[in-house]
Image (cartoon, rainbow, N blue to C red; front, side, top):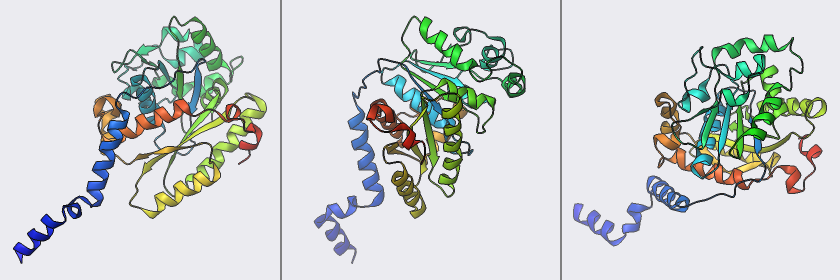
Length: 317
């Protein structure tokens, strides 16, 4: 019996390799090879993307820092603006952000130049961060009485980009998961909205709320704001639900959803506890490969107005 089984295996070696795990490993190896020597075309004008989703726990900060690190690894100069008082983006980029460190709070409230607070991530000279501190939690209240309270980040960013000795190709702004004055400042400062969506139930419900907020900003504060990019995160290909959510989001937003999906990944979850992005922590892991693929796609993924689409129509989904 044992001899017969061994003979079958020798006669049909492809049967051994044709398992879900073997196919997954082969696919990942092929994708790693495809990324070797990959390059991106750097934008002529700085692209400013606000990474937002009013539903928490969707991989918003994780996507911000890992896309930023992936773009930096591909040669782009990237600034991450950490607008979340929790400061998780600053932590993941290895940036000190205790209470005594000058932060985005000082820019918004005391009009510090952004250049005075920007720090370089230890991961790459191309990766910069404007850190958050706990002081930012009080900024929502303090901004209420400030002149031009919705435009403070925009003014600071414009000044920084005009005076920077080196070009900044991408700015990614990490928002808190709520629509307060911090998030409104992010929307007002940006040209594009980048939305990570978790492939789970209620995903589209949170998206509907966010699009309502975007339309409000378009009408009153920033008519040029566009939803340009949607990234599906925490994707588990073994579940029917994940595939259904992905299909539904793609049906509603065919031009905005990236082909790349970010899988559930232990390495992606572990990296921040080491003060690193997954690109630095384990650059060969499935999560790192997916974020590098997403970064390449984002670099080629033009906003709706540049794709010749009607921006007003896209905003009414």
